[in-house]
Length: 238
Ligand code: DX5
Ligand code: ZN
Image (cartoon, rainbow, N blue to C red):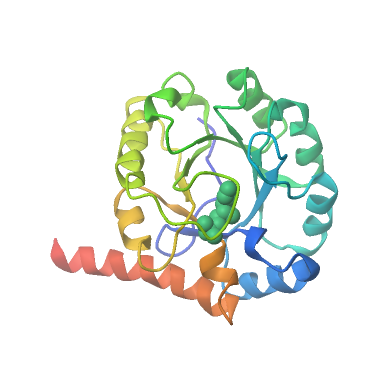
């Protein structure tokens, strides 16, 4: 079994700031700030205005980000028929590439192709998509991305049912013999970080919680500290 998504540092949790909430006129500055804050990954949201009601960026901007980022690029494709653009985003520099099960007609072939090019392949499920949708592909994934908001915009409220979804996804992966990590995406902040980590997430995406802060580097550190505090708290409890 190949190794999975890039390994976590410290307490086993990875922080992936989402640049959707960054200043698009200052992406280099904002990415440098979260990297100073210890970001493990840079989460890049690609939207086509069809799969989700918003349009963001394409491979050209990912190529530009690749020139300035020092951390792996975690590219989240919220686009119809993502298989059409997988190679463009891999060539642009994606280290992790995730496609929505709701948008990808030939998911097994697409996941295999991403991996054949040496990147980590992830499947994404929306809030209304059951964890069972991953059963047939679970053993082939490097990670799962669980949406805790309806995709398309940053700054939305965390959907509480996502905690149960995390546990169900972990169960599907475990039953498939997969150690693939689970990434949680949408409405994550220092308040709910302990609960999502306890429910099975080990990669936390955060856009608004980090880039709306006066100091995104400090906000990145604070998000990781919130998870570490959980781990410490749990240890004292056991
Ligand atoms: C939403 C994106 C998320 C979003 C997270 O469609 O996939 O990555 O940017 O942003 P926050 O943390 O603001 O919900
Ligand atoms: Zn995302």
